[in-house]
Length: 248
Image (tube, one colour):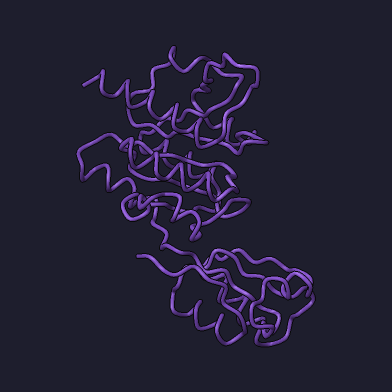
């Protein structure tokens, strides 16, 4: 289900949005504000697993378009999030081995949108993103995905490393992109697989990398040593597609 991404300002409006079940990516609250209504909003937000950030008044004033935020602004998602089980069910319904993208701290909405587009085009069954230190399903993400968000489920999880462990129990194995890995052409990338892509600056985090079964590198022949995250995702994803087609 799609929504119009927006900032929701004011205590009553934010509480109504939370109680309605509308997906909220982040909730910004004035630092030091702990009165009754704000405490109720915080409790409701925790029930919904919304990310809560405490900020200065100047931050809220810059975000606000009305000037009447009352110390609370929520950022509503543009699309509804799926569950991890929805992604696995999609693979099962198609009679295919799961192929899932997992994104570690991708904060650029254009990168996320482009990766979702690639995931759809290469036949992946869904995308998993973390709740913290990552962009959510904003309107920019939706536009950049060129419609792919209507067909590709995106799940948001609290702990990416724990989710990898749970998916391993379901038979998936994992490969991450990293310059220090074995060249991707020399690896067997068939079977039920999760492809992990990290942020451009930091790459895949240490804890997530430790959960990977393989580390794959993309051959570089130029004068610089890194690819845009969405480009790297596309290159590796289509090597997975090539090997899957070869296996059939």
